[in-house]
Structure formats: C-alpha cells, structure tokens
Length: 138
Image 1 (spheres, rainbow, N blue to C red):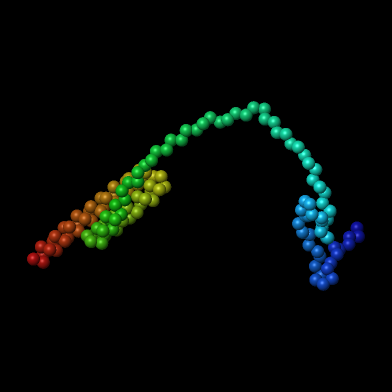
Image 2: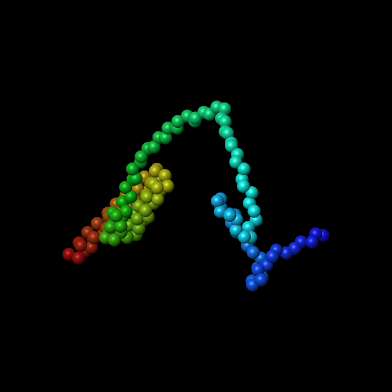
C-alpha cells in the first residue's frame, strides 16, 4: 500500500483546485499549472512513387419536364361541377408533383393522365347535371 496524499484544498470551499488550459506559447505558466514540455520540431517528408489521376467521368443529365398536374382544373370542377369525382381528380393531381420529384417520371405521367380523365368525367357529369336542372326548371 502506498501512502497517497490528497490534493491540496482551498480553505474556503473545500474543493480541490481545477486544472485549466495549458499555458499559451510566449506566456509564463500560471500558478497551479503543471510545467509543460516544449514540443520538439519534427520535419516530415512525404514521397509518392507514382501518382495517377482517375479518368474523367462524363455525367449525362437529361432534363424532364414535369407533366401537367391539372390541379387547378380539378379544384374548379370539384367546386362547380361534381365533387365526388372531382376529389379523385385532386388526389391524382397531387400525386403528379410527388412522383415527379421522387424521380418516378412514368408514374407521374400516369397520375397526370388519371387526373385529366377524372377532371373530364367531373366536368361532363357537371355539364349534364346542370343542363338537366335547367331543363326541369323551365
């Protein structure tokens, strides 16, 4: 068993002194800091036997145009013509942007076609319904 002495305590707080940051170069060490050894300077020479550069990479970027989403048209026919099929048109119209931004171009085109189809169905039903209503009122 070795006889270890506890660290010196401050008389007022009973807490051992804290070790701080090492002294900066050009400043004398402060009281309570352990003496620092000066780092030895070392020169490192890197040698490379043969360096080859990778072959250039060609990136082909094709720009796709987002298919028409028919969202405004779908909202209008939902409000003014026939809402049950208009809601279906809005759902497909909203899918177009989501699918296109995720990179599914074919899915976006299919959703665009479905949005257009359901928008036209809503418009057709709305025109027929309004025409029948006007005829009945005469």
